[in-house]
Image (cartoon, rainbow, N blue to C red; front, side, top):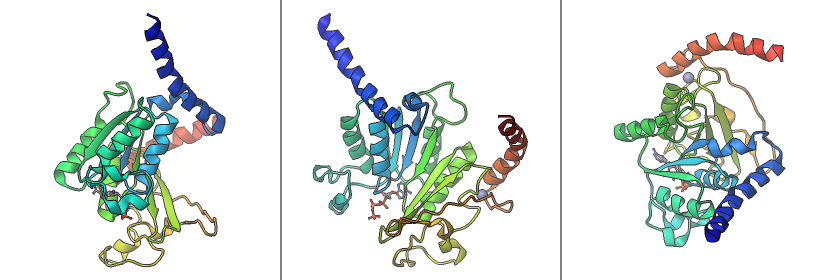
Length: 270
Ligand code: ATP
Ligand code: ZN
């Protein structure tokens, strides 16, 4: 009937206008494929919630959200969470807000600690689940974003991604929120999070005792690059450590030695 046709048109116009925005930005050529992509976001705090909202507005296909915490009044000075969501788990509150913004995104809420044995297990199996795109190669997600605030959780993400050969990004913001870092980690190809231990591990102190102005103790000091006051954003490439303590990292490094020559040759042929 006519009524049905109309509603179908309204629903269709929504993702289309989102894709138009992506097209206009002109950053990626295959902007239409964003609807096929799954992104896992660990930590729905200051960084994770904003990343989730941006991806939702761009029309991402599926988001997997992990956090063990509840929304508190203390979080209200940040963007994203609303006062009436106090007491809800951060992942459930995020699903509520994100589905209002864009109902086409498939949203999965995982309220749990990824560093416990059971939590890590659930984390792994959720990343492996391919029901959204059954013929996808590798894991069931295209990218993992680490938006946590402590070393332990970063090491858990590192472990999972090394085991699954999963590309991921690590983020850190300093206590004064003026500087931060972003690190792209490709197992076997770039340094993993255990390849170069951060300040806190190298110096053997408890990260909770190491609170210094402008320093994010849980992050790599070497990649603490961005300074928003000076608008200074240095970049560097870190090769994997052949002595890395992470067994899965060493396995990925071995695999990459076989892949690399063919890839370099293909790049030269272009
Ligand atoms: P702040 O720490 O500055 O008070 P916040 O509580 O929003 O702010 P952020 O540092 O912005 O925290 O975000 C980190 C998020 O990562 C938090 O929501 C926290 O609950 C979550 N997180 C940290 N460790 C884990 C973990 N092991 N498993 C699941 N979620 C985690
Ligand atoms: Zn490593």
